[in-house]
Structure formats: structure tokens, C-alpha cells
Image 1 (cartoon, rainbow, N blue to C red):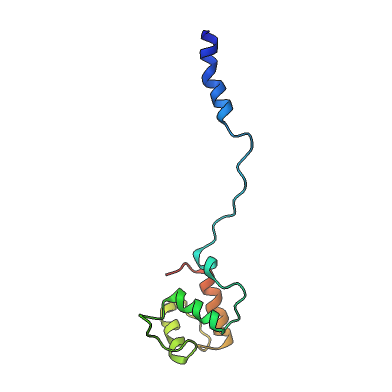
Image 2 (image 1 turned 135 degrees about the vertical axis):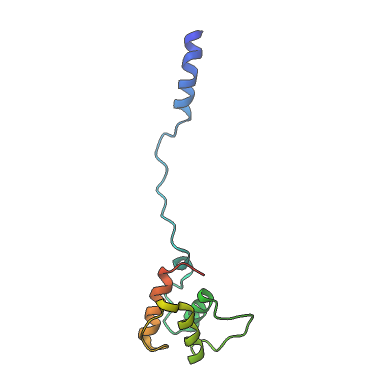
Length: 107
């Protein structure tokens, strides 16, 4: 009987241990990448809305029209020192903003 009681904790430990390793889990993506539109064309309404949401350009429904010079300058201002050096609104600028926001944590 003593042997049985002495072996009981060991038997419970073996019985309760997992028989196989846990399934592989994908590492969590940065929030920026999770919300990024996968195939949004740069300069499309969907892309502008995503940039607007990420940088919180719209304030209580009041903001410049997406893609306008004033809106582009607001994006430049929000990006600060990280802002692209290309002319705001140009295809190169849009590509740089897109790449930056996909790797940058959300505000």
C-alpha cells in the first residue's frame, strides 16, 4: 500500500503531462499590418481611408478632403521626422507612406 501511495504522485504527473507538443502558433503581427488593406491601390479611396484612420487625420468629422494638398500636409505633419521627402501626394510619397504605416505601430 505504501508503494502505491508513493507512486501515485508520479503516476498523476505522467498522466497529466501533454502527449504531444502544442501546435505551432503564428507570431502576432503588428497592429498596423493587421488592419492594412491587403490589395488597396495607392491613392484609392480605401487606401486614403486607411491612412486617415491610422494617423487620425479626421477630427470629429472635420478634415480636409482625402488626397488634397491640405490632407497630404496633415499626413506629413503627423508623420513628423519620419515623413517621406518626396513631394506630398506623389506616387513615391504614397508608396513611402504606405511602407512606413505598415511597419509602424498604430497611434
